[in-house]
Length: 446
Image (tube, rainbow, N blue to C red; front, side, top):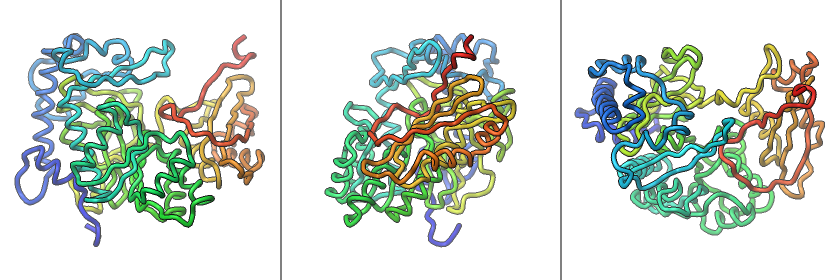
């Protein structure tokens, strides 16, 4: 362990949850616990869920002997949730205390609905309590820039976790008025911010321009969407704060993993979730260190268990030990999502993550949208949003930045792509995970 680094607090928390004994948590203890919980979860789903009764019909009823044997179990997909969510529920609907509706990008436009029992949400509150102790302690103020108006929403669960930690939550919600959000941050003299990456970046850039003489937060936790290195770098530069990244999604129960002070990958919530990384085409599990699609299985979920659920996230397990000394598995920063890769030519493609890295690195840029129209040639247009009153960049600067992306550069040179840029004033908005909008052109549609 490197001098000065503390072992992630998730280590002791998971040791307690798994009933592990001894001075240190071992992989053998974690995996023995996971195997037992895995078999319990599969048995419960088969008994109580009409969907899983059918879905697992071809799987042997004997207990899974090794964690690796789970690879023989069929995968569950977002489309399954869209079509069969009610049949995934285990037990009575009266036990469900929270339903989260998620928009989808499928052709039907039907939303996904994820169901949680009170016990499921209690597990999330406890994870948040433990995880936030990485960043803050008793008396520290944390500004929550996530939806929290409804009981059981992510902001509300985080608020509960902070209260149990002895912290002081400052509930704000998503940023809808940038000056007001920054003024509230300064007025409350918050220690920590928890929010959407691009919204926190916009706050930092506004603070730098108009509020720079006031106190800055000591740390920030970024969640809900891809976290670009450009955003992390800018937050560190502007606020001199420590930036942590959280990995999770609603289907996981909101919490999946969290960075420690080493900032070298997400330590995973292994008491409640079992993770795999698979080849997205063949679905075979990949060795540690190889990039593939992240798949997870819930181990303690009561309301709506998910078995081998495909996230669409591309990442890898980090095989090397963490500098903090923890034995928990780590997932590398998510590179991109399967459905975020837009093909521009035979060997060229682009992802939202690549756009983030080149556009959000530009001074004064707070956010952007991107659209690809499939035509001959295809057309990539970005609308870059800057803070009001700032005209730092020209459209040519933006176009030159786009050409730093190999896929864009090669596709443009091959005559397969035309690029365009617009500049607009920033207006805070949030519509879930950001993605490239894809449209069919007139000529390609005929």
